[in-house]
Length: 385
Image 1 (tube, rainbow, N blue to C red):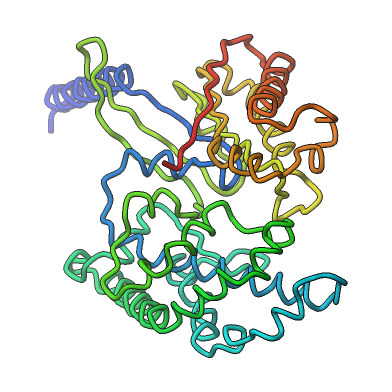
Image 2: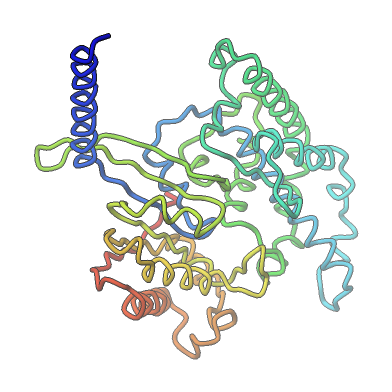
């Protein structure tokens, strides 16, 4: 090739590079990059579920996992409480009605928890050995129909194994459903839940109330079932969708970041907006990894870190004070905020006072720590509808 021809080829390459660079630059102008931040169980994944049209059947094993975990937690707390032999406790009544305690069917369902969690997690294990599913982006493919795996033999093998485990759990659930229902309706369980001895996930009571429907042979999750699912994510879950605003088309991309809290920040310095979710219903809950830290305090600390981070200073900041429906239920049932948040003091334990109290604390954290004095868009929300 002569120098002239080489220069001509080089010129064409440079021109293509410039065109591609200009195309990407123009595309970035029309991209809205939104980060969903907040602690585990704050509602980040639920917010994405409401914008996703996913295959319903992929959620079946996740619902089963939620049910089994709820049953396990109840048994663990019952065993602990009844071993204390506390006077005036319902222990004698529980002891006289132990049919469900000795149920081999319920035991069989509990025995499948680790297997189901492992399949959903794609073999990923978390330090500490907790029996819980942790999923990555694309996890729905694990329960997709056999034809969806195409010619990928490894994916097909993993998907088949997950479906086999799900079928096994479904059969076990069908046999054990009456015993699980008996457990949930037992007066001793109601007593311990009422006195906050048994601490279940926010969604646990929902699934146990609907156990008869969930245990049906041809069960297919409803919209409410999917929205109530508790599912921990690892890595970055991404979802993009088009949106028209002011006669112009934009591409919105939501990023739900799971796992390590600060490692991901440098990758999102160009974020358009940050949506931070803080579940106010968690005032009576503590972190699994640190039982001494109240979840509201942890949310405030994490929100403060986001406000003060220089790399995120150009992003619009939206705060969703979430799970207000569950907060109202807890307050109506007589749960006292001051028992868990001592600074709440003797204020009235009603919905309006509690909501305004927590809202003011988040506003104060923003005023004190925000590095760019940006406006804070704040809303009360209930993601579980």
